[in-house]
Length: 176
Image 1 (tube, rainbow, N blue to C red):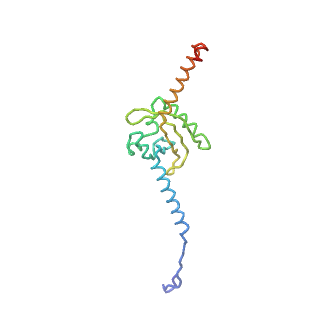
Image 2 (cartoon, rainbow, N blue to C red):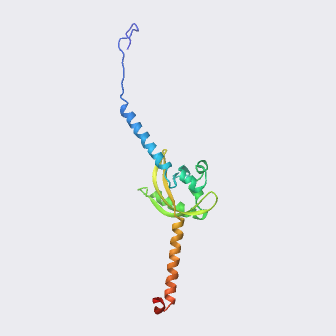
Image 3 (cartoon, rainbow, N blue to C red):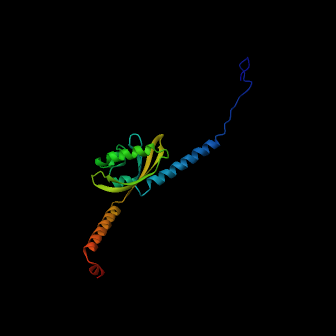
């Protein structure tokens, strides 16, 4: 503050303790680093997609490996691009139902998925609502269960054949 002659009479200084803010920023950076490690190094394919556009926002290395698209290619795709076209109506309905849920419901189910080369496999998918870079999104895990599904079908068929064989044979022949 200057006097009438322009000389300095008082100096006003404002101090603001930023240590709490620095600690908060450090804690946020730590959480982000842990998320990155858990997401990127997870052996199960994981991705984040925008709930409005269905565009992939992030994919981990396991997703790139399982599906065959590069990370950059994935980020130009939508959720529908990894699904057979005939499944699109059911997927869109399921997503509409989920987005109407007030809890941001986790979804689990087995869906057919499509790799870059066009081959398909069964994936058990679980998703959960999140906010990602300020956008409503869902994080998804997709476990390849093709072998499990095939074994289940084989067991069901074997059970049907055993039942048919038992019905066709007399009780004495079954006992042998």
